[in-house]
Image (cartoon, rainbow, N blue to C red; front, side):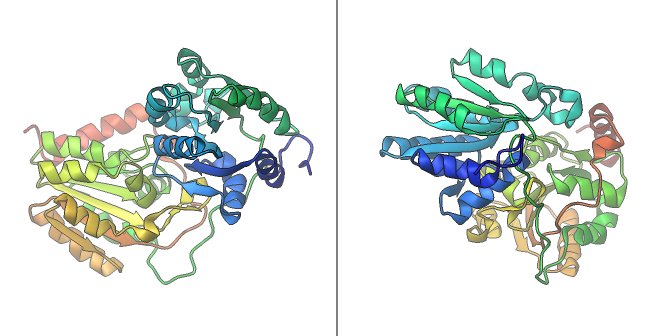
Length: 375
């Protein structure tokens, strides 16, 4: 049954895939697709992939095995997807259907700054690599016309993208709040705020950056919006080139999983001044609370195996305060896992509501010089 006029219901979206034999969908969440991902997960048809490229590779494997397969992703992750798109899917003529949200399109000024470049480039990038694409407008009443057109390309052995504008698919509720006794991420940040004053602090995209800005009000932390999974690599670059500057990276479980290989780079280079903290609530909180695969991943053990000098799981704010104080006064690299509860929708605004990205970059550069100075 179709949704309300101008909205594709979550049931219609998922039923349409099933009617066409698509029962394997791999993806990375986007708030545009919260409903379909939740429903596909309940039906047992959804794989939570580490990143967009891995999602496409998994769908390609299912396709070669004889099953119709699809991917759900956000266009901000198109860069992660390009390599397997061009060197796997197109090279081996593997038909995969990709649903991709159009953040920053058609008007990039109506979205967050990290979506500006990709928002205005998504169609052109797909044209440049020769991939057919179909755009579903915000006022679409059915997904079937796009799927009919996509089937023509899939039948010919070509992968095809269905690009979905904001508002086309029914909205779903936000991330549920936690009901366990784990500390909150906001409370954890408040507890260690005094320890962060003499460090160069990098916070991952999503609610972590919102809460760090909301708690500290600091205009010289690096609030990373976008570039999901790369906060640790960014912090590593700072730590390796500014050896006298303490560097603290505040990461999330979904982001850390996305580019988990950076932990190996840290272990190989051993920056003594780096502290890497992963707040683990088991969910992609800012995109609707979809589950990550962190429930079966022991981050502390992975970091230890990767070569971090000191690793620890902190199950209370008191443990976190003691561990971070130790990390900032002893050579590392250090890795701290902090299990936290889900907080639901964030009460804080993005840092870019108060600062430009240029101001964030400039403020952070000033803090690096103040905390350590040129090496």
